[in-house]
Length: 302
Ligand code: NAD
View 1 (cartoon, rainbow, N blue to C red):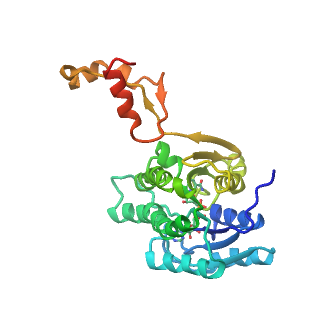
View 2: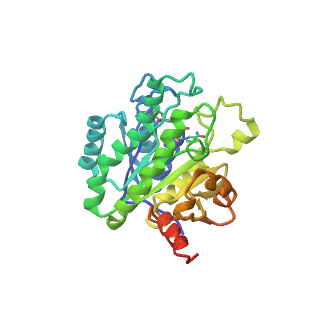
View 3: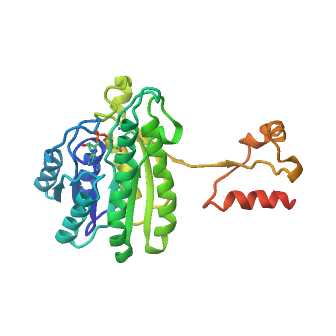
């Protein structure tokens, strides 16, 4: 079975370099028309030029695909609106949005300025929301959409020196959870990638060369392609690196129920072993799961 995207239109943000470039080229190679968006800045978000996006779009067009370059800053609603309008004018629909643009401003929280905190939240979280907000009515109207948010092991598990980045990347999980629910009746599927790959972002992190060699962008792109296909799941967080693929999840322990007299910090301290036991964990489909679990316990049903 070969997965194709003929007749589909995708916007890939931050597609002038690294993972986004790999995503855009792979989508185009499988028949998708692609808006190659990139601001063309440095890893910390400074500077900018549309030439990074233009190079990738030219490569796609020269290889027999169809692409247009776009220099919108994903944090600017006007520029993002113009990007979506350009895609609509040229092709009449937008089926796939891959939110991939990103920057880094690593520092310990003690040394981090709030400006660096906000700048990173702005590109990853607000930028992803801005682009998704711009295509959402289009996807609802056409009753079809595939949206990817690019999270990170930093958002799922934490990395020292990345309070801003980790907060933004974890925020994308919340955004996915809500949009998965809101998009379901319009056949809009929303998924998250949590990648590790060799790009300019990871080149200087001291990862040993033999491991870096294995961490190809192509390995991440394969997961992205599946998550934007017609038969994609929705609300999946796919962790991927160097050819390994796994599903990440928020889980809750089974926990305990304490009667009103026992709802005290002392009793919680006493019960902490049972509350935090990972022996029996729950994977909830939505936010009513925990209350249902606790009420069943309170009524002695569990
Ligand atoms: P990269 O620096 O090679 O690519 C990011 C691209 O985003 C750049 O081309 C940059 O110009 C563009 N960009 C930045 N701000 C923008 C803005 N405001 N508007 C439009 N474009 C903008 O890095 P990468 O490693 O390919 O990262 C791609 C995504 O994957 C990022 O969201 C990153 O956080 C995420 N990620 C990467 C890794 C990894 O191991 N490389 C790990 C976890 C998450």
